[in-house]
Length: 133
Length: 149
Image (cartoon, rainbow over all chains, first blue to last red; front, side, top):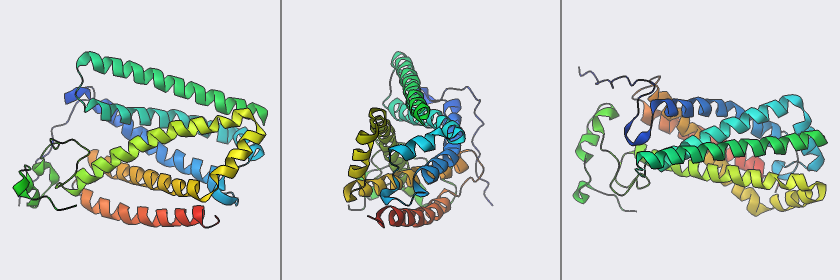
């Protein structure tokens, strides 16, 4: 019987061709796994428990929702995780264009800035709404 | 779309027909790019669809943050938006979003299970199993979203 050849184990920090790394892939998997839970909680708690048309909350209902400390905490974790996962995925797609080392560093800096700005704006948004509740 | 055959000169088609784990059959990225899965195995099709839904979801993430900014304006702005967003066109787009989330999420679970070595060499069986789960969930979700429109 044939035995399938196994892949050599890759070290954690080894760079794959094109600037990708095992570490970035692992973080994508870990954040993806977390999103399975966070997204289901977000969708069900936010939209599916309502009996309203389309499952959308009116203004007062949104404030009550985000004013709940547990929901607020979960939504903050969700924001950080989804932003990280989204931008790592975008990086993976962009790296397939075959940039040089310098362009890759610029891309990383740009994506970090975008990610920090996204999370900061999201915190400002939910924080403002929670303070109105 | 017509079936691409080995006459088109794509490499690796004979290897792909052989029995055995997919690692033996690596044929690389098509010269026309990752988004062109023509004439390739189902895994390449899933890879392209995973990236397209992923890019769509990144777009939606920023659209979502933009739309939620209406909440900062106050009560009347948001309630006007809700009235608009509960019409049939927007609810149809919600079903499209649900499809993207389900495909990307379930395919991600499949890739993670295979890629981390937890369930190696069963990617096709996982693909079809998750397709069934995804289709049923999409049907239920579409019923919930559109059922009251």
